[in-house]
Image (tube, rainbow over all chains, first blue to last red; front, side, top):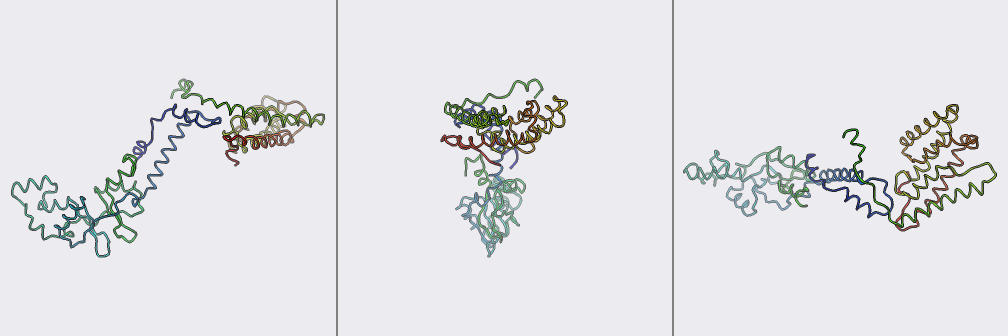
Length: 203
Length: 178
């Protein structure tokens, strides 16, 4: 989380009058001016935002009920699972539950477009032109053939603030969350992070 | 912000306290100053000893009228006065031939030392000054000025503040000890 994000969370529109009214609510003489109190309040608020943002762990915002496939799951099944769960990507795990990759909509589209098209519209365009729109080879493939590997994963204890940075740096939209042994325990999406921030209206 | 515009101020004065606060402040100061003044004028009369100095009036403003203020807390009340009494006497002993210098060095030094020891208590500046501008009676006390009137005097004020300021349901003293 950058300084700008923190600034956006701080209620800058609090006025001296608000402080003055609050001071009237407290009986006894307060040895501070409304202006100074406002400064203290805004600085304290900024510290609180930073502290809370740093202290929220990814385990608190991730989706725990995560669908996963294994390396030998057929792409047909992968697509079906993603459609049923209404997700745009699934982790691929080995027999021990360790994450070995991620299959996303993009990976599926890429293989359907014969490796040259990677967006939905590109695939449509290719199909309409009657080229490389063969689903037959796709049917023979399995998750391990097309997954992005190694997967970008995060640990349960990773602060959400760091996760937000990783999404941008690594250019991904979701990351499997793993425990200390590398086993899948959940998945965190950009949406989860947004919902957990002050912009998301509370998690 | 440019130099002159700083003089306009940026905010307004804090709200007036409610009437009960005014009444409690009045009674607190009445009891506290009564205790010290009674000892000064009645008990110590004829002994040559004094208990009351002018700076206690200023302390009463803080410890009965602004009891939440950091400046009014026991650490500041006792620490500020005793420290300033010692510095005041020392400055008189060193610079007695130049009273203007003794006065300014004393007050400036106690402000610095009170900051450094986190015992800032404005009335204590007067305590330092009294050690220099006081009469012969004060001067003859030497460093015992820091014990009586100053040390014992502020302990009595502190005791009254502790006993009195906690009677009212919505008043509490102190905010902290150290």
